[in-house]
Amino acid sequence: MNVNLIDLKIDQDQYVDLGFKLEFAVDFYRFFKLKNKQCLTSVLITELVLLILISIVILPLCLIIFRNISVFNDTKQFFITILISFFIWILTNFYLLKQLLQIKSLAKLIEEIDQYNKVIQSFNILIQIQSNLTNNSADLQQQKTLIEALKITRNNLINALKVEAIFRQHQKATNPDQLLNKLEEDFTNLMTFDLHSSFGEYETLLNETLQIGIEIHKTIKNLK
Amino acid sequence: MNHFGLLMQFLRDRHQFIDDIRQGVKLNKKIVSLLISSCLFFALYGAIMGSTGNYLQILSSAIKLPALYLLTMIICLPTLFFFDIINGSKQTFNQYLAILLSAMAIISVMLFGFAPITLFFRLSINDTLFFKLLNVAILGLTGIFGVSFFYQNILAVTQEDFSNSSYRNKVLKGWLILYAFVGSQLGWTLRPFFGGELGENFQFFRAIESNFYVEVLKMIGKLFN
Image (cartoon, rainbow over all chains, first blue to last red; front, side):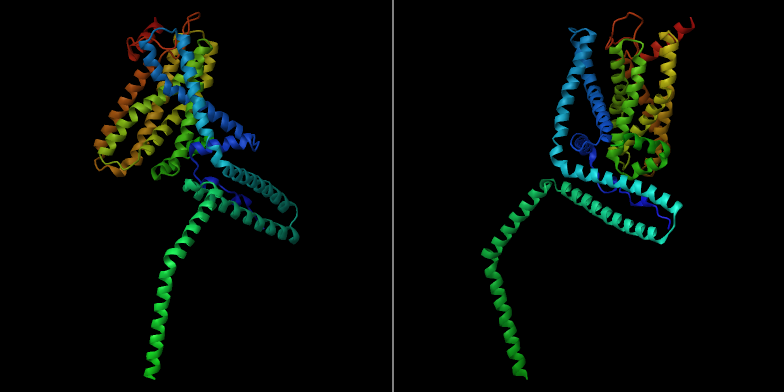
């Protein structure tokens, strides 16, 4: 059996589009909380470019100001520009890191998908080695079972990603606990509405239907 | 976030990438990745340009070179976008931005490719004038590549929107000339990118005097004298 497990890998981009803010927050969370060292490069590069971009925006303003105020020498002008950029960079980081509260479960899910993809990669190598060395039916059966198990895991992870995407689409109910509370509240409201307002109406309708049924029954009997 | 992965994907299969931009596939992700990778490469090349001065000049040039390209884009892109929208373009601003950023990414990658050569001349020749002219030539050459890439792709992406293609070509060529003028004048305004002669103090900005073209002609004249 020639199996290519790579097709079972999950490309998270197909299912979720996080955008810059959330992606940065996810990387940050994965590095600091989940201790994923691979995210360090991404976090550092993003932070560095963020500082450069802020300096780029600040630069023309500083150019205009320093040309009108000739109090500072060039070195001081440069350090003032850097200090302002640094201050705005810290504020931007605070804003971006506020996203951390929203993305805990998403970051954990992405971490799990990453680990799943690594497992797929390892299994793929193992299966290729195994298929070159032996070719007995017991191994083939094992491979089939393994692929089935991986497919189930894949489907579960994809479903989880889709659920996360739905939660984020409806941002007011991003927290699952909040969503459940809201559902409970809505349900209680609905029950109250049924009991107090519509119950009488339903009762009337039911009585009317019964009356009609009895009338029809009587008419049919008379006709016989 | 694998920004360099997306950049490599773009460099390997540019047609597919531009097709994705035309269809609006994951535009925001493309914009962010191209912006981040371009900024880093420009900053690196800027640092090499500034290495003729002290460490402050290196830092200053590492900020100024990405600023030069990004600010030129910010200044010029709305003109093209609104002109095209009035003339019937159906593309979004993000699509225009993504195409211009991909042209900038081409320029930044080419500068990154030239970086070892520039560094070699920086270390082997102690002639600031030659170093300046070498960099002007490299920036000009990479700029021409980037601009021609942008010209071809913006035409390809928007060709269905315009019935009069010769008029459209003229408008686009006019805009490219404007882009070149704004870029060179902004470069002149943000100067110095290079450190001065040995012992000269660090300069963050210089007073507005003369212009870019006169200065380049002067430098060529000095070099041959």
